[in-house]
Length: 258
Image 1 (cartoon, rainbow, N blue to C red):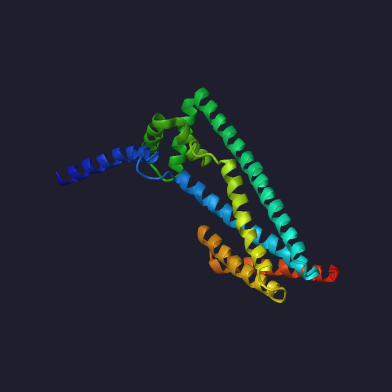
Image 2 (cartoon, rainbow, N blue to C red):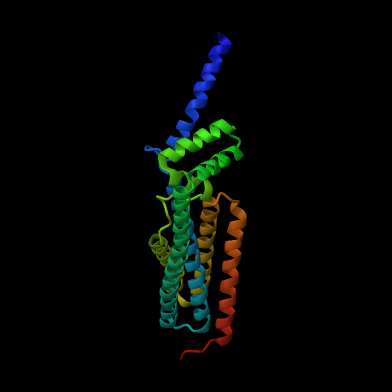
């Protein structure tokens, strides 16, 4: 009786596995994995956009400040860099993400045709994916059958392609996020170079930029679950090199304003 009871319990547990996996495709009370991944990508893109805004604008305004003490020249150069950089980031992200979205749609359309033309082969392919993950043959077929019955395209797209049909990348979101992030990042060195007295503006800007780069490097590493110190060091060293180079060019090509 004891052995029989355990066998029946095991059988019920095995029967419930496909149902749990089917429900896991779109749990009503939890945020889908695709949504979380998309938001993390936006955050990373935002951090990188802010980082670019900080370094690009800092390099330009420090170079111009090294060439001339005129605040108007620094302001014009900084605003031009901010505008051009923000638009460049927005257009670049829009084009890049649009290309990615087109690719995802093409793959989904191909998968949809294959499901219509050869459903049995697709079912066997899905079962094979679960067998490769260590699920037994009978259970793998049952999982594939139930998931296909629930939402065939979503099941195959997620298992084979890693795509959630309901969470495709949005090029407009990426474009706006990058543009806003670049603008906010660029405002920091622009304010740091314009507000202090002339003798202090370059040192203040350098310190402000290095602190900001340390912060963005730390946030980027945290979002990517990677070691923070190397990311922080890369950011800070890159910023130092950029500012040193543009400052040297400004000093070499600078003019004296009477």
